[in-house]
Image (cartoon, rainbow, N blue to C red):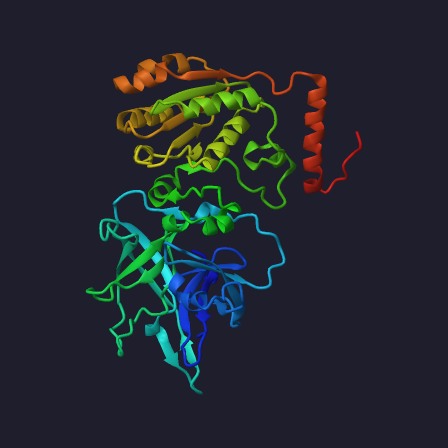
Length: 438
């Protein structure tokens, strides 16, 4: 959670004598604020959606910003407010920090909002609503017959307030994170319980609505795939992303490293199709090996496959060389489809054996796991691998492995010239050098 994205929300009453509604929210980009639907229901009922009907104040600012309702959920208690004016096209957001719970195991959460219990009058009668940070656990097995998630709060909770108002009034719309993923927003405090329990509208309900997908994916017809909290916890220190941003003032040699992806991926169309088909096969678990000399583009091919599968909802990445046995065992509990790439596999045989044995032993038949080894040569390690792994399932997995032996990316001189020119075009602005007109 980025604390500076936390926002206070106010929607004025729409009729004479009507009081306004306070709530909490979270900036999911520079201009869109996610909040609870009932916070904006007064203006929605008055057909004021699209008009400048509310105000939003980021935690990082003292100023209120005018906003309008651009989406109110029809089957879930959620809404989007847009700060105005908006002077740029919207083509969808980075959805990588939106998440879901995939199991019935408890998961920790954190949220920040502006509840009634933190309201106070300062000198001059000015009302201040301060922040309240809450922590605790999701309790997935509670309230299964509702469309809401339940929070079990830890630490101190506010006392019940007068006039039958909830001490949590104003907390509605607060973003609820588990780890790095936004899983939902605070919706209500249930009756018949002390103030140490809240209910949450999950993101899974929001992405079912076309209006929400329009803003998140840029297209109402495009599905929004959510990462599982449990999967992130199991893989965040075990799998590294296929690509990372080029660091500032990087040495020229960094431009050649596949992990930075400075030059767009090219060629290897047939190999990519074959690897994609391998991922899509019916086998619950499968192993493959890419073999080629150094500089042949095998690591970049694996990175591009990881990126593609990631876009299709897989958990994918390169196995960390320091991952221990417990972490390898944890990969078998990943709930999503999983692609694990192991670079320089010929130098990490012991780890490869551990990985294969644990996945082969623990993988349920309903899951789909792919292990992609990358090596410069097969040598003696590859032919001997079936006899070195323990367990029938592990041996069968190795013996059924698919071998990809890569040739040159470009075989024709003209194609090689074009590849060189394309690389130069991307290197030049980074190095601050003019592009030569070849």
